[in-house]
Length: 166
Image (cartoon, rainbow, N blue to C red):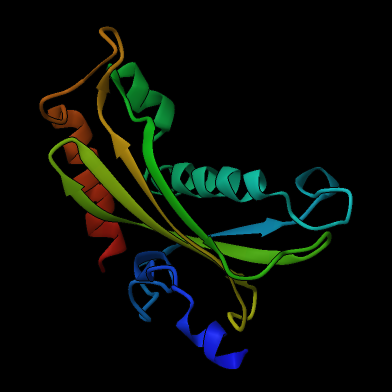
């Protein structure tokens, strides 16, 4: 019986979201959260969609922290929808718990903007979630992917990169 178990196929590793990209967290933006009743399922555990909402809240707050309002980016005619999301749930958060969402812009490649995330306990002893999100620049009026980021958007992202890589 034990031989049978050891010969079963294993799922491939998804190491990109298993652990944070770097143990050095000094360039990560930190966004505190608290688990409220509307974040949980009937058993008091955080519903999976709540984690995704926290990722977006942290990303928008990160931009705001350096003076970039997301609404202003959209007003420039550039929408940034999520086109790819990878999330790894390591441990469950429960009603009443606090945690920190850490985020950073990982890479800009053409019109694609990649963000990394971790959700950890306040004391950094427990890892709850690791994630990666990819945004793509879309012309708001035409609804089509842009060929390049508008200069004003790229300038804003350069400012973000400079502020988080100090």
